Length: 91
Image (cartoon, rainbow, N blue to C red; front, side):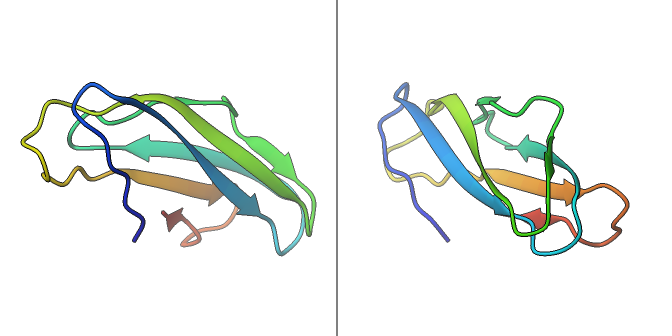
């Protein structure tokens, strides 16, 4: 589990490295947060990756919501490859 620290109202950017270890295909990206801690994904509409290819996906402009200092905020970034069931990988 990764941890990100910052006061309420601070703005953060995250980067995820997506690696395709099998046949080429289209990947979609989704983010969720019960606390509204989401940003803009730079790969709107997903991305096509060939076998062995990597791509950096950037989520920018994430504003830390008002919370008591030390409170935990849950964020999930999910990668799905089209045509593959059961292969979603939450991060």
